Image (tube, rainbow, N blue to C red; front, side):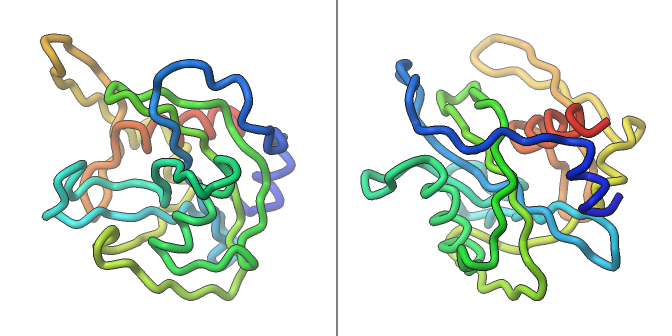
Length: 186
């Protein structure tokens, strides 16, 4: 799938003001970075270092909690992308946002979809990112590439979808955000 094909199939919401957040969830934002490699659309993903206290070794998007200095959640996503990957906001073309996603751990995540303009270079924050990698969007769209993952949290049983990569299993909020994006494109 090319970027043009992706964009023609999906109309993204324009970023909204951060109003209507009345619950006690911790506000956070992520950037779903899209890149085109040899004419094919890819998603840029990060892998967290194994020594981190929270979510060690997990696959994720650049993002994090909203800081007091962030004017809005879009600022959070752009700031975190720059801090974690060294991508300057001038290399990011915002396409829009998706609906919020609430995690089992009490976070409300606002996902922003963006194209990373070529050429780009990465400068990883070793404290937050062990490595990055690209996954072709066409592989993520194939339902047969996803598997069910069963787990237990606080005496409750859950089933989520996961996607095997060379860097581990993509699952949890990151996987669900990708699956939500795919629903809009297919």
